[in-house]
Image (cartoon, rainbow, N blue to C red; front, side, top):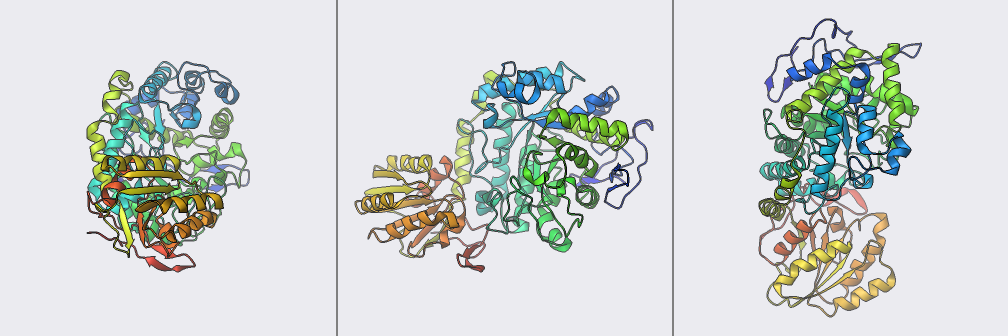
Length: 612
């Protein structure tokens, strides 16, 4: 049966019977036999929809080791593809990033700041080209997937001079799919200019739990309908259209939904207590929307979901979830990529060397950042040769990966122009668009004193609170207004001397603007002490939650509260424009803000926002 993909039903391309045969259906669940054999639940009798002719031709000439290499996306260390880096030697036994790609016939790499890979747009473009040349000159000559997590907002891997935007929850406050689409298009175009071919974004998780330590403002909203609408818009923005070339693959994450947990899957294995009906109503809509829009990839979450799979396996290793729900129920035929296999959430139940095999058997295609790459590759090859994994299933995964690369132009145009990258990154047009988007995200939650907008009577402003670069950025935005401005960065845990100093300074100014980040949490008690002290200074105080909007309920003595959902420079620019009346606030809460001591009661409801 052809699967629905990208709003239309597509046919399939048949492979020869020597490559693919009929598989036994397994009602969405794989089982392990008495002798440890892994029976895959993946039951497609034909190649995946949207398989390209290039992918079919290429697969026929690939060895098993080349195929298995395509399944892995991992980190390489260094800013230059051909330069030695000691961590490559320690982890992979070779010196340079290019040698890692050649030795292990990698399908892809992922870049972070901590891998010493992301210094400047031109450098990133040169690194991308060097890695692509290494891939094209070895093995089957297949271009790489080059990926990162440029979600924007809290998770921004590449900062200025690239265009930086405020992130998902801010876009949820704007409530405009056109702005979400535009933000993704800006991000995607700039990433592609630097040589990236896949962005692990957007986050489709519905953040219904304020205690969530890992998602929070990375989510669009607590409302599944709004989250779905904006997820769809961003998939379209990254990928532009199903036929577009030289675009970037979007990745909806973290399936089946990471929004209702108070545990971080980087350090432990969260348990989501939603039953199937709750999952379909609450968690599934953004992923349905992404799939309907033709998203290239879906990333799994390392989550226990007993209502979906009572076996206790994390979703990444669950055939019931990846094959039964994602493939069969939602009809997804793109690339399933695991979240990082170095995270603790996936290591709780199985030995490290078993995890790649179990993930593939469950329905994954791309294996992200295995704990030990050489061992992981050998474990998959050994599982295929022993019959624990089917080579036909490996073929299907490779076809999905190769076709994704082909559709996005990586095969026809694997290299980028490093000399042109500076003209395409952080352009004046993109920056103007980013500011226009961000203006619509700032949310005024409370103005009991009628303080806003700040008028001509304000001659001096004291900027204080969390974030050294954030307080400095806001102060810099006030300079063109010819205000006397003083700044004091107090950090996330100011001591009593700092609180006293800040209060004394506040008394010397017409108004104080204090920035908070996590003041509502147990660890934010010192920030609350600062707020209480400033509230007693006798001068007007404007408090701004620059990450979680939940801060706005933590101190009643402050009569003016705003939320920006982001501490990025562009958010401070829009905040200044709102505070001083250059633009009217239009943001509305994309999540409810609960009472601090009564989480079952709302201080500010979903959709709340003041304007003038």
